[in-house]
Image (cartoon, rainbow, N blue to C red):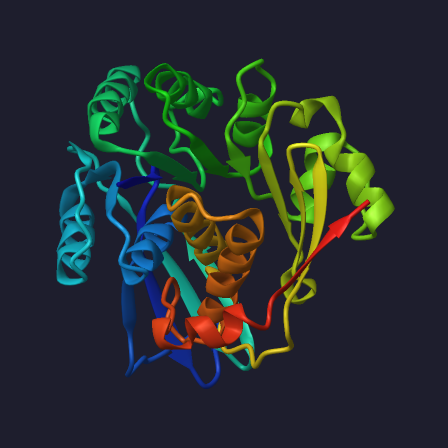
Length: 311
């Protein structure tokens, strides 16, 4: 079973309007509300791939209740730490070909609530074969909180995929014990290393050879329509994908993590792991809903993905 962690989930609300009027009334006829957060997108896609998954994190208030209801409707098992503080809404206003976002920061967790979650996490690990940790940390938790989760997982012998950015990602890479896999993009690599990382093979090989990444078994650098560049152990791979009609790219990175997690959990070959991850990412971009794939198209697009080992 894969344990999918979302520490700062939200209800994602989409407001489509023909024209967004400032300092005026904007009426919306069609509203879409989704249980949101990167880890929840991961869990949804894992469930659609018919792999065992349990979604966890921290939830509170009526918004937290709504998120649980939505997960239950989708038959996604979940076990969250419940707190009294209210979870967050994230609003996207879709107007004139643009997207204006209003993102609540979410609850501020106390030190005790952080400790309570680590205890729950350790308990949930008893039935987990792999862990995914996705997205940002809520306020109040130290930037090395994901590292603390990584240490607990290491003691249990459970591999961890971390898909975060900024200081929380840097913190899990600063210590000797590293995550099993990470999935940065080139912008996040540049931020981590303090240099501009281009998407050429020489640049990427040099970047992934940095001491910060030593000990990470899988590094999947996602590059949108260009596919991915990957380091697995001491080997490098270029993964290319076909041109597709993009409907909604939001959440494609999360879908990629889901495919990566499922393939690794099934002990597939290197080629199959990379093709699966790219395929789920592609399938998400072809759907209007975030964190959804049409599993019936999986084999067709899986066969289109090319994996080339780089010397």
